[in-house]
Length: 486
Image 1 (tube, helix red, strand yellow):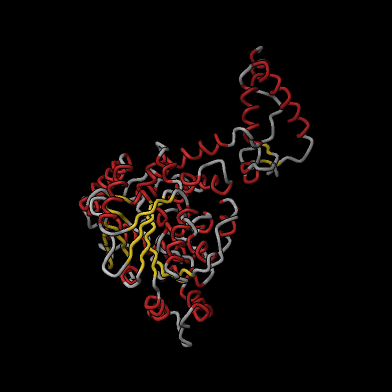
Image 2: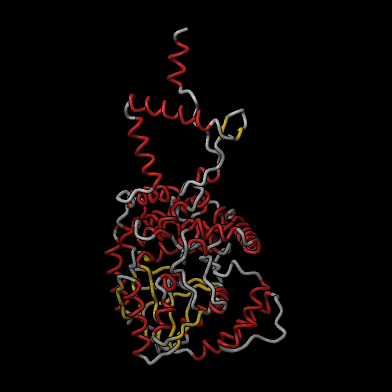
């Protein structure tokens, strides 16, 4: 896959392009609507759902407060059970560790379990640069990879594709990557899944190394947990000789009893199921298999240091916030320029990467209507609107040294409004401007008010979308002085 999020435009530009794609909007509306309905049905069955949400949030917050202790406990539990633990400060270190393990075993291809962490660090591209091919085995990830595309959803990366498009991708691209699709392949879901199964089976049987992530890591036993719906994860986790798991340091839970809460929250919030069809757990190395665990930071300690934003590290990657977001439903995931799209991506990317560094990242906290639907849907009660507003202030603060036109205008207005004499002079000046502009054709707004129309002021979203009122020919002060003499 050669497609990349690097160099993506800021959200407003990317969203404008996505909004013009009517097929994309139909695909998204159908898919998110279906997932929302399934989720609502299974969540409605749980009388204590709100208590589970509160418990999940409390467990995560308590774990994050003592993250250093739990990570050391996890490392000891893993090493005691035969696994090798690696620590990666950033994406480059993590990719180097995985590539080094592959080279050590003379491996030139790996199979992968669906993993947001490996997408975050660009592992596939890093391995390809070293002559190692990484094959995605999740059906949706396979579609994205074969189509030289980018994921647009946390749970369903190919949500922007319909069945007809998937059929064409399989027919055109499968042969170059392995077993070709059947000549008579239709767009029936069962046939598409069957073609993917046959294509992947030879890769499962041939691969000597697999790479996974983890939904959770239990500190007390060194147990990693992967939940999935297709069985491809189970094949990757059990068949290869070498298993490397890249795990974000926030994925940790202290005990098995803590895990119980999340195994109730996650499937209902993500796939709309009471439980996942496949829940795989393993502790350290198993007989005949070498196990490595890469504990990944990559900006997570930066997020942890943010007292308001650290709640984003509660995220269990269920994608419930995406499925209820009116902005995501209309723009899709590519507009966010990251493997983490939607409301959670709008806060997670700036927290992990920092504000004031990249215009694309700085645009994400504004990619929201602040309607609050994401908070209501979040199974671990991340107050996404609160964090969005907080990050907007950080973006503004980061650019104070090089103010934009709007900031200059506001500062100038503040200077004028702070002194009555300056304000009086400005009012008289506006009156003169109003009389001069009155000689030109002015638009009449509803209610008889006059307007200059829509002015092409650079960077002014207000004037580009709304009529700008014309300055009054007489100020209120002038009128009051004149009328007060009567």
